Image 1: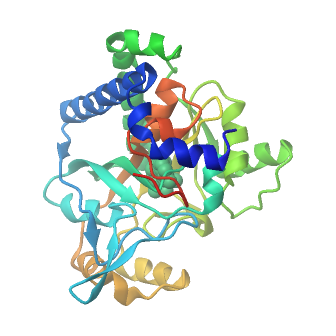
Image 2: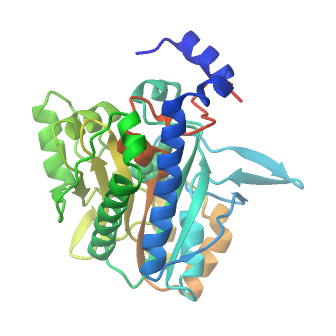
Length: 328
Ligand code: AMP
Ligand code: MG
């Protein structure tokens, strides 16, 4: 593991790193990844929309990271931690949408060690009206396999430079419930309590014992944001999911079906200790009615890290921002 001071000075000299053949190969693979994802989604009827960057509220479900606030003509505004609340605004008129959405999250300092957290990153954020969580999980599997296949044929030279052998995963991907995942990580020596998120170390350990991507579905309500739908016949459990990459790369995707009932969302916001007034426009939109939907976000830099087989996420982006480190 690279020392903090070395990392800081390397980031000050990023212009040098960007001239290395490996870094050039990573950026070319990334260019192909983004282009392949766009092609796949357009072929499947999705329309790309421009993501918001600032707004009066943003995604609160960001696992211990802090939001960035600033004064917008005297009103407190946020930089998007994710555009989740906005995707639901548009699917009434365009039922399949996606965005390459920039997100800012002031992650805790300890995330320098996870090798998969940046404070500025991008998600391909996807939403589909009237879809179930199983529908969008299938979509994600098809998207990932189609993109990996294209990378293998179009980026042979770059993968050789990076000495990366990409395995094609078999569909459908293996699925664990959250409960099963907790049992497995605890059998590996972790102490995750039912109802908590899998911590980063546990997530990495679980990822390490797999050689293909896999799902964790049905998280408990206590571990996730207010916008996920509770199973109608299984209270306390959400219709949501994470996809984990194999080989220790950890979380790739989070997503699920949305709760769209005004009163239930209101109750969940209050139970989470937040002031519903903050979510004024969002709650009004739910009151007026929006279609049910499901969707997910896949981190572009994490996908690049996995595809290129990189040790650290900060080498999967040209100008990385990492918790606590001031860099260009
Ligand atoms: P989340 O809403 O937190 O599940 O984020 C959605 C996806 O964005 C995750 O599954 C990751 O692929 C990616 N992501 C989230 N946080 C970060 C981060 N700090 N750095 C890089 N990628 C991230
Ligand atoms: Mg997540």
